[in-house]
Image (cartoon, rainbow, N blue to C red; front, side):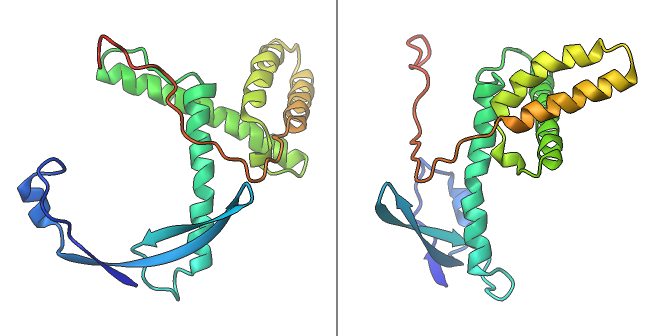
Length: 189
């Protein structure tokens, strides 16, 4: 358990009123995790306000921190694979609708991944999101045009089999530093 002190006032970070509302000190729990990246061992400090070690074990907190990578992958799927890097709508209400549409499509793809994984005793995270998106775009029109429910069910099962066959390769110790994807716009720096 460590005590953090409120930083000195800095007008570039916040206004005086907000700064004065901050507590003068705060108790934090500091945990260390060793991570091996390309043969080098790095120590990462995880800091939390979950102070009670009997309720929140250090292994639970560190496991949760490790799962953070999945959040990064999910955001990448939304932005890059789904094409949501740049929203095209102009009004706030339409931007919300556009964003909700992307989330709906994302969740529908994830549902199919979960269904395929359950049928084949795999973990959904082991299946490729991009491959699932492509497979669905090919198979769903065929399923929609199927002449009978029996044929639709058969095609749907085949689609799930194909989705389950598209696994992501395990890449231990992979490092993916953040990159700037676009050049700054000269017109709007």
